Image 1 (tube, rainbow, N blue to C red):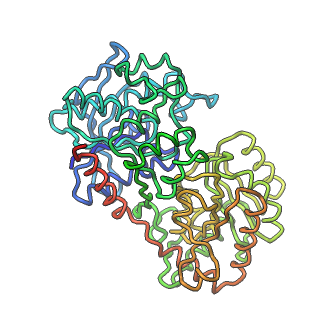
Image 2 (cartoon, rainbow, N blue to C red; image 1 turned 30 degrees about the horizontal axis):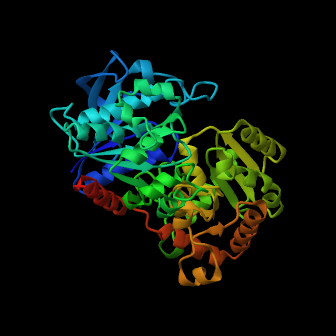
Image 3 (cartoon, one colour; image 1 turned 90 degrees about the horizontal axis):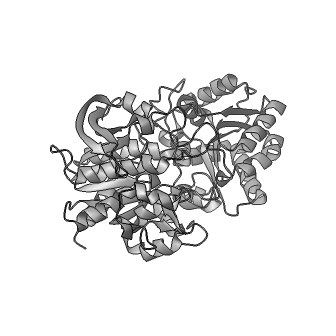
Length: 492
């Protein structure tokens, strides 16, 4: 099949979260499975700089008026992988801005985001209608709210008989919905019936997320548990009714880990690689930990369990639980190393804790891909105590690198981490630590269990070996997506 992936970001060119990792890995997995996959991306500076051999394909007229933009084609070269064919929307007036691609310097969404991402969906639909004479997709796969209008444009193009392409929409995080004022609908180039309760109207406003959910032929989420959760009022973010209505078109497909990027045996960011067939060949992890402790200014103690946290700093991620649990963590002899950015009060609170105990707590505000790899390589426990978590890649990286995840039983965390109970340890299935209630007491009980297991070295090594052997391959996920694409193409 000819499959067009539509995303606002793609690793290694541009990454603000897990969406980029999926957008970078899935096309390669589809290509390895024999599919003809391409990507469509907005022309953010990092993307324009990273796509090679860009050449003009066509001119686009914006759906809101007479502005003209160029569509260019090239390829993305990732070390050791086949080049990914890519389309880029060359629109400097919309995309050439410094810093975060979605927000201004005051961390407010850009006022014209509806235009910036309408153009992404519009271009996808134009490609499905033959904009590039050399290649026309049979399936358009739109990722998250940024690409949410692509299924809407395709729906009305199919009604007009100008395309037969199927559409798939993937929800990476339902909490971010691309909502804007109702008067922005006039800029979108959609017919009036689209702005309706049975469409993209959401409490009188425009919702790109709802457009994708309503108009897509098939819907996927990034884990089976999250697919069930978002059909409930607790996790549905106001869209649970629509999702229950569309449950027959909804599939949860667990994200995977790109072994070319995340592999402790061959990771160039690590001072020494390691792997764990039956618990052997792990000397490299001990060295990675010692070097990381030195690099971060932590006490170089091999006996101190090192808890790591690589995350956006928001309450959704359970960061207030981590903050409130630092005293208990330090009292039991642990260390904490954090990498992330987000809400100002959380950034400052963690900075203060690091300043008060610099040999036990390290805080790096921002994001550094190399340091992220080093944290997983040297860490003993990966903290992911989220309120909700559609899939979560952090715990999957922790599993891969033998940094046992400590997670709340929710979303993809529930699908990927098996608690270290006596029964699951005996069966060889235990891979980490799981708690249920989103409160300090349950979180701190999980912390105590992690410390207790760490003190029993043979048991720790056995669970760590289980974790590192857990399969998380993209070939399996790609096969599930291909099945969804076939369903999207089937006559309704």
